[in-house]
Image (cartoon, rainbow, N blue to C red):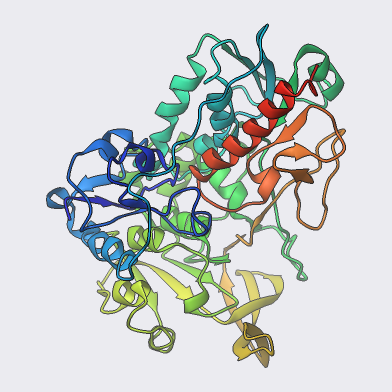
Amino acid sequence: MPHVITQSCCSDASCVYACPVNCIHPTPDEPDFHTAEMLYIDPVECVDCGACVTACPVDAIKHDGSLDPSEKVFLELNADFYKEPRPRPLLAPVVPPLQVRAPGAMRVAIVGSGPAAMYAADEVLTIPAARVRMYERLPQPGGLARFGVAPDHRRTRAVSRQFDTITADPRLELVTGVEVGTDVTHQQLLADHDAVIYAVGASTDRPLDVPGADLPGVSSATRFVAWYNGHPDFAAVTFDLSQPRAIVIGNGNVALDVARILTTDPDRLAATDIALHALKALRQSKIEEVVVVGRRGLAQSAFTVPELIGLTSMPDVDVVVSDADLQSLPDTDPRARILRDLPRRPGNRRIVLAYLQSPTAIARTRAGLEIEFARNELVAAADGTTKVKPTGELHTVSAGLVLTSIGYRGRPVTDLPFDDARGTVPHTAGRVDGVAATYVTGWIKRGPTGFIGTNKSCAQETVRSLVADYNSGLLA
């Protein structure tokens, strides 16, 4: 296998279109693209040309001879993906260039400056005469690429280089420190532009609905991530790091990120872009163990395999999983290969992955927090799915800090319709339902799913809808 995709894959599919033999999958037009944890290189079809290496914005593709020991598992992951024959054309489908009717330049406003906004701007600017004005509430752009990616994920954060290239285009005007809906209205944007694209993400947390969830010492992983990444809205927030144990409720990639940051040696974090106030607090931290709790089983974990590989590769932190949980995984599950036979090293901090538990109440004591959990079991439902059922057994765990990480949620956008159940703006192929010349892309469009690069194909759909409307005279 000449080349291998590794941990920091962002799934923007730049490599797919660079590959001359169509050996990188899934491609954006394939059904499993939006659910795949990463992209994979066919070890048989790869011709070792290196085009994918150049195209990758996050340096995720390596030659198999240059893999670190912790990255060798990606050889197996790439090969496993192609165990079953995958019918495909010789070349990936070509995305036709955007073309607009003459005369005049198309003017587009984009609200937000995160990955979804940047990819949308990149698409619009493929039209030679197009102009983009991007509005960002904060003093600096980046969105989740700046304030959501963990500082020790250096290669993933490297996608910002690509975004810097986009914002350097003289046809893009970046307006920071301006909040749409407060400082400027939607109607004003429409008066000055042919169309408006909202790429405002899903910026709030799904709340934990148990007694005591609002107690001091209980916060969200989203706030913690923003705090250690230097988000200006959270610079003054404090977290109790004075007790030996912290609990993270939820087990997605963000949950593993915060567990890793809480247990990483601060001297190693000092070499990253972590905020100085966070580094100072973490140097004084007394946390020795972080328990990451999921209400379902290990097989239903929300984190991705690449994120798990990064967690288990930490030299000074042990990852602990019970034998019972490990036995629930089939040998063919890559998580089984990663989690079995992990070392236990005296003196190391620990990240414990705990399963089949749901928080039912949180109480404040003199020593800190007491979290009550109900034990669960998995049962087969009539529709063939697996459901969680409480067993009736309760137990408590003490901690100094509780962080909830049970999902993101979009907020209503002024002057736009909002689906409160899904936390998104209703749309048809990116066109906001019932609002002329207005579009959405990213998480406010599809919900909090996918990775940084997934926003690229999402933006392509939205911008193509916009251009089709422009060419039909609907935006005149």
